[in-house]
Length: 607
Image (tube, rainbow, N blue to C red; front, side, top):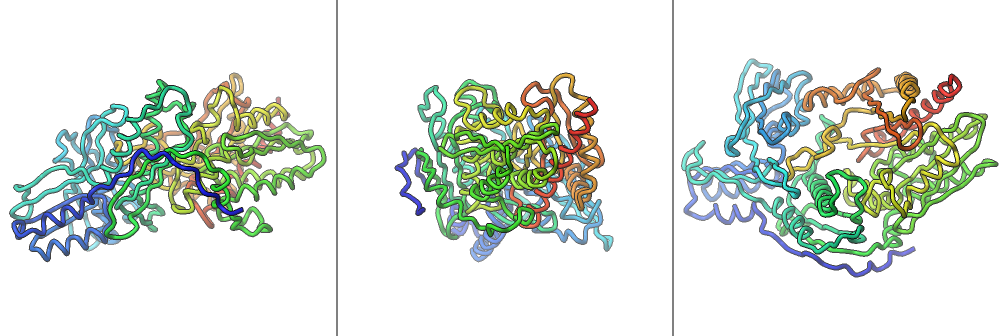
């Protein structure tokens, strides 16, 4: 089916802003600035900054331009031969209104860029003056040399969209008559990157949204901005100011609508509609930064037609899939599973008119409910759930319910955004088209949530295995204090881990399940080393893992009256994974389901 013409949009904003770097070049290449010394911090990539330094040098200005985003990491990348460092002691700054390790987190993943064990992060003094915010670095090299560095971390104190105090990265400009002086200029500069963000927030806050949710079908935010987008292979990490701005816009607007609705901050029942930031690099070097905000009706048919050519051969086994499968492929697998005599099929509708498909296979064993893609940008669980069901189906007495794709609307948005930005996390696709988290929906219409209720009711499952993921690389909100509010423990990968929830009186079952599953997962090739590496890097920057561990797997166990008597939530850092990394992720997810199902039989039989 060919894409249809999108319905008309209601434009709320279409504005260009001056590119900060171009303004600086125009200003400081004037004759009166010759023989001065300039240092600037802004949100531009290294090649662009170096080209600008050369233009300034041609005008007689000695210039050094730095990254305002992750300045310590970029200082090491730009100015230090990391392979030759024997020991690096970094005293990171602190501010009273930010988390204690806020600037240690912003130094991530420096520990992985240096030789193993070389980095030593230590807390520095509390700073009150933005102009004095520095990392202090002491380096010792393998040849015996030592160096000392002061690395400026340009930040501005400000109130965010809900009035909370923050310190956030900002542009900065220092100009002096001699090297090391800033006697002519020393000031924070609101860069184009920051201005674009502010325009989005201001525009949305000024709209008369009314009181009834949802406030819109789709809120589109298109941003074209300077920035950086690259991989750090040595650290298995990506740095993207475009992705970071997507995250900051999305979660800032969620917080605004939570406040507008009178809900508490972080309330996942909020249903504002679908918020869709699309943040892109400038289309060409001389382009102007621009932001457009529009209200748009849903166009499900056009979105599906553009998003889902089945790029995997139809006969390719699930265990070989290197990316998330299309809904058609998922549906075909479910139909094959449903061909077993006695299997029951059930469905639920989504807000955008798609269908949640589920099946129930009755049997003589203790029933288990398997689900995936509650958060639609966490895709390894989809394949893991299907693979586990294929393995379970022929077993004598197998008894399970399955929903492999709980959130089809979010899944389609994830594909839409991923077609342009395959390495971004896309948390805008995390929730439903209503804008809420399906699990927390507690008022009609239940829509997708009805499928989960039906799976639990028809199967009578005492165990729900709910497959999830989280970011495979660092998650930041650069213009709202850097650390993602409410998700602090999720901003850095820390391997595959487990969350257990249980009804009152079921803790012994949850713990027995935990022990059995972690015992089984130790046998998955490569998983123990994978966890060790990620947890070690996490602890270097964030401090101790905020969970208990068993056999190298982090976990938590809490009492919760909702859902099945026992729920096992898996968490693989899968957002943005492709190829072999994605195959490893869904292999681990499948292994967890099979281990949990087998262990549950013994737990139930033991009473």
